[in-house]
Image 1: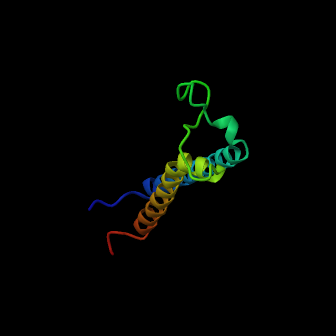
Image 2 (image 1 turned 90 degrees about the vertical axis):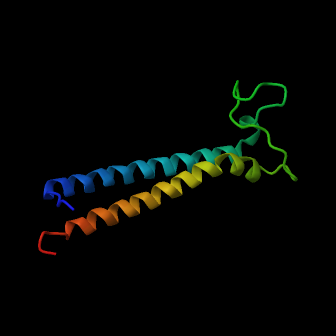
Length: 107
C-alpha cells in the first residue's frame, strides 16, 4: 500500500469537513421541510383530480386516521434514511483519514 503525503492527508480531512458541513445543511433542510409539511399538510397534499406534481408536492396516501405525521413521514422517510447513510459515511471517512495520519513507513 502506498503511503500518502501529509498534504494529501490534510486535504482529505478538509474535504471531509466540507462534507460534514453539507450534511448539516441537508439535515436542517429536511427537518424544516418535514416540520412545514406537518404544520400545513393540506397545502402540500394534492387533490385527487389534479395530476401529481403539477401544483402540489405530496401524493395522497390512504392512511387509517389521515394523520399529518403519517402523510409527511411516508414522504420524507427516504430523505431521513439518506441523511443517516451520509452520517455513517462521514464517520467511516474520518476513521479512514485519521488512521492514515498515524500510518508511516515505520509502522
